[in-house]
Length: 223
Image 1 (cartoon, rainbow, N blue to C red):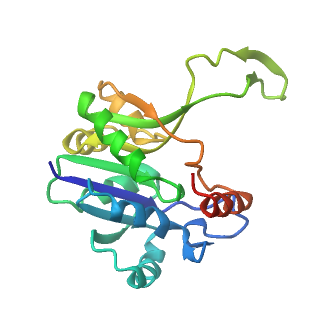
Image 2: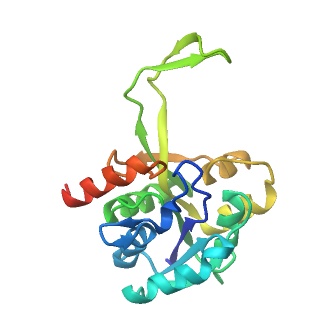
C-alpha cells in the first residue's frame, strides 16, 4: 500500500501578531520542520508534499536543505483557502492508495498518531484524530449572553492528522466547492462515513504566540 502525506503550511497566521507561525523558530528549527521530521521517520509514509504560501516556497526550500528530508517529494504553493492548498498538494502525487493530511502548525504529531490513523482509516476509508471535550460548553447569542449549556457527551475537538483513501479525498475536493474547515467535512459532504480515532492533548495547534511557548515546553519534556 502506498501512503503519502500532505503537510499544509500555507496559513495566514492572523493571530500571531505579525509572526509567520510555520517559519517561527521552535527548539532551533522552523516550526514546520518538526512535523516534516515525524513524517520523514514514520515507516508507514512513502512520500511527503509540503504546501506553503506562494511567496514562501523559496524560503521553505532553503529551510529544508539543512535537514535532508529524503521523503519530501516537492514543495508547492497553496491557494486562497485551506482546501485549495490541500488540493494543490494532492495533485502533486501521481498515485497513492492512502493520504495523510496534517497541519504544519501541529508540530507535536507523533508516529503513533499516524499509525493509529492509518489503522482507523482501513475500516472506512476516512479517519480523523479527535479528543473529547472536557470543558463545559456554552452557546451564546450575539450579545455574549448564554443561551444554553450544550451537552458535551458526544462532542469531540477535531485535530490532524486526518487519513483518507486517496481517490476518495481527491474526488471529494474536486466535487465539493463550498468552504469547509477540514478535509473530513468534504468527505462527509459526499456521503462517506468518517471514523474518529483518539488524538492527543499534546498535539496542540499553534495559533497564538503563547502556543509557541507551550510547544517548546512540551518538546523539552517528551512523554
